Amino acid sequence: MDGAGLCRLAARQVDNLFPDGQPVPADALHGSAHQALQRLEHCFSKVNNRYFFDGTRAVFDHLHGDQYAMWLYFLANQLYRDGAPSHWCKKLFLLNKSLHGCDIFYEVALPSVFLLVHPLGTVLGRAAYNDHLLVYQRCGVGSNRDIYPQLGRHLTLRPGSAVLGRCKVGDNVTIAAESLVLDRDIADNTTYIGNPRDMVTHARNGTENIWRT
Image 1 (cartoon, rainbow, N blue to C red):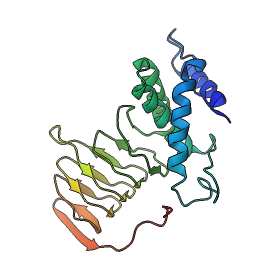
Image 2 (image 1 turned 90 degrees about the horizontal axis):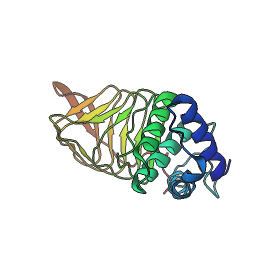
Image 3 (image 1 turned 180 degrees about the vertical axis):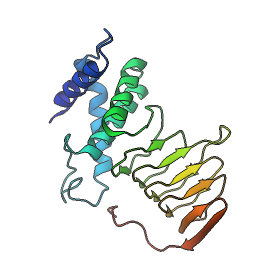
């Protein structure tokens, strides 16, 4: 599906979901959608998976749930960057939340290279993110006392993990499944397992093989 078709699809979806008399005009989305598609193609070109990059070019299927969730974020965020009406951005954010169960507000600045894997129940707040962010289901990034984390490159959030509050997370870090990082710094090349009361860390070598070098 080309950019114009994606705009028509998203406009129909939000208008069906929110028939509030303020329709989102598909044609008005085209400029931002073009930029959003360029961002998506760059992102997908860094993913070492044949459903995202076939060895020659980025591959995008609007019927691939993880990919469509990423697309709706890119589109809503690009519209926000371009100064589009806020209710367009809000509707696309809510469409993504309704379809995929993930909460990624359109103002949140995700990095240029990230990957959502089955992101049901995932909430990504206003942290400082860096490239090669890998996020699974039921993950959380958010504030504690209105302070958000600073996250390094090559961060992996395994299912059910969360990073909250005054945290500085280094490069090449994995937060293990069901683990909680709260107001804590984590050094580069570390796997973190546990919670603030009971945790261990292990040194790690190499990065996730999901990323193309």
